[in-house]
Image (cartoon, rainbow, N blue to C red; front, side, top):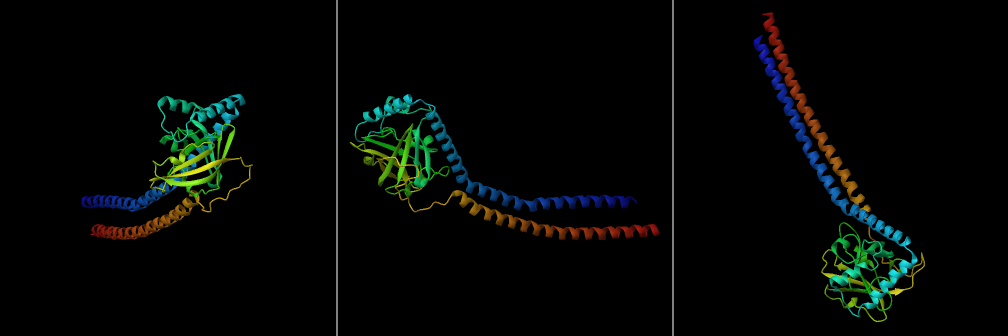
Length: 328
């Protein structure tokens, strides 16, 4: 009897060990599937980052513009006229040529002009042919250029007028926002508009130059001219040069009117790219994971069946031995 009990204990211990082995095998078999899922999620996250970030920045830009328009609407006409007069006086005080270096006092005065919201926004720019709609802030520091367009300090302020040349700068090729990425699609004859308070300034592109960063002669203020130049880095992703897209002032177009032939290049929406790549990738990875899991599941079932058969044989042998002892 003692031997039988000892055998039963040993048998129970063997079963526990077998169960632990099975659990270990199950955990090990799940590991590749988990790794595949992690890789898939990481890939989808990386692919979707530019799209989600760009949508977020577009929403931020829209909110900034909406807040600016609301502030303008809530400001009296007398105050708006005074702000525009101050901007016109600022522009008249600028010398001909190029003068972008300002001392601290001059820069502080520059930042105070047209800052109706107290946030640094002076207006917003619209480029219909490439669907750009961005707030324009004072200055071109990196914090501004990551989310919007910046006005180059030292150049004329956007309200424009005779003997003015405003310069608006924007980043290109950021993974987090489109901004001026499509600026290279603009052609001579395209238009863009800058709105400052209630004043809409429309410009038609008449010159596109690619220059080195230190070549700034094209940004000079000229007598009797009302220019605005859009500046961005080029070539895409290399950024060794600057693209200067200059426009001259024209009359404002009526809503819906257009005297412009847009560039023929078509930019595929990031959302389309994301779903076109991520969804098939998700489907393929899921199918592979299921196939691998099923194959391992079948393999484990066969192993379990063999183990159960061996256990049954062992139990049968022990029962026969017990019966033989009892009969004897």
